[in-house]
Image 1 (tube, helix red, strand yellow):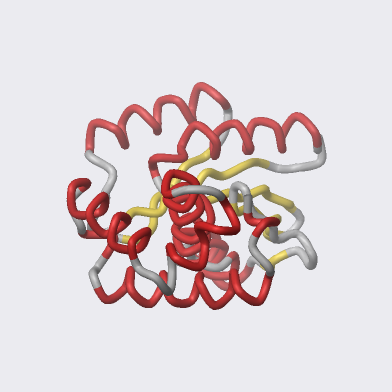
Image 2 (image 1 turned 60 degrees about the vertical axis):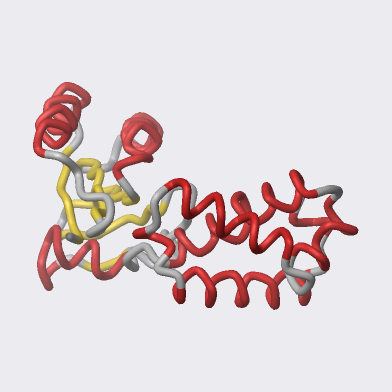
Length: 182
């Protein structure tokens, strides 16, 4: 879908939607308010009016806003690999060059003689984080371990009972888990 929107135009639209999402405090809006804001963007001649001819109708415009603009914004708001590694291992560990990637956010850390896989993201993506960590351990038998780091926000902290459940699942899967953020 994003291939239908020329790159320069997409970047302009992404910047505009990101700016407006910050202005309306998107992360703290109720679902009804998010739906209303999406409708405003679809109806805005400078956003929806530009997207509609490229992606289809209103439904496709709304989907582009959610699946491209807002997801990219969410990914950009995640902590960087160095911050995650510093929280887990302190100043002694180093980011392995060229190991940072997304979907989910992940990297390798060199902690003394041990190389560790780390992936991080919001609690809503926990199953994807767990799957990535399990696969990393399976694919690279030289790894000393794998970490899932759940990034909490003020708007969406991990409830205590969910933390307990995720910790139990991590132990069962042979991976380590930590939280950062709110």
